[in-house]
Image (cartoon, rainbow, N blue to C red; front, side):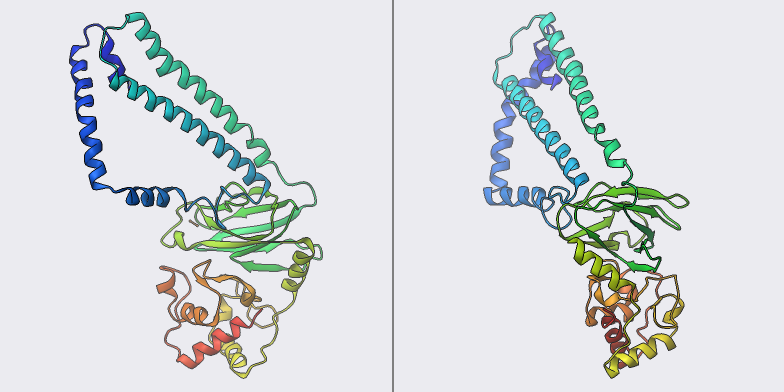
Length: 363
Ligand code: CUA
């Protein structure tokens, strides 16, 4: 910009030449660009850039929680401010290109440069900084005393989720969080090895999960529905395959769900599923996984007591059905590179089917 506006200064003759260059070449650049990009392509490209982040279960622009609402407001005000500044800069550019060069007074030019280059940006950026920082204390405030507490641990690459229940009975699950609507909830977040970042864009801001520390995040969902969270910090090979679902229920439905999660795993009815249970226990799966109500009590991998009731497996990597479970068990490494769980593709197909059927039935 100052290259263009600086040309009016006395003695700026070589800069004048640059303005002529821009004026001469601008129409040629525009017409060349038009020839190579028809309108349809332009609209498509803009839509691809703009639209995907605007809605859906993982959009910060479609808030379903108090904190997310505040963050979305900041985003829209900043976007509006950015648009106003952009229009002003473009208007000045057009003015500079179209106005015949003439000598300006040294004083006016200096005022313009100091005002436009230092004073206005300082005022605008200071205002935005204050506006952007003001909501932080509220966003980082702890949840009120007695709020529901959920402990989440970021593992490589999945989420261990534990609810603190009033009667002390454990509710442990993986890659899925269920919440009651309009109730504040406090997340206590940690990680045993590497840094992850816990983020449910529809409900609020993100926060790091740091080994050796417990970070806290208070959220209040305001809408029921299914939302998606993800890890927002690179944490290893399968970082991109580390997401989870958040289901926000009416209060009574949430209480019913939590009570059901406390129950022990239901013994299988179908003979094939019963065979799957036998295989699960005989193949050593219980060394890493817990299924409450069976001898399996491993803690390295996800608790599978009610795995069949979850929306996904492998931390959002696959939908939850028998076919996907079979694929996960047989070809784990293909679904999630460098995952700790070994693949069991050496088992006969019939045994894999039995295992998948058993796990799918753990509702
Ligand atoms: Cu965990 Cu990225």
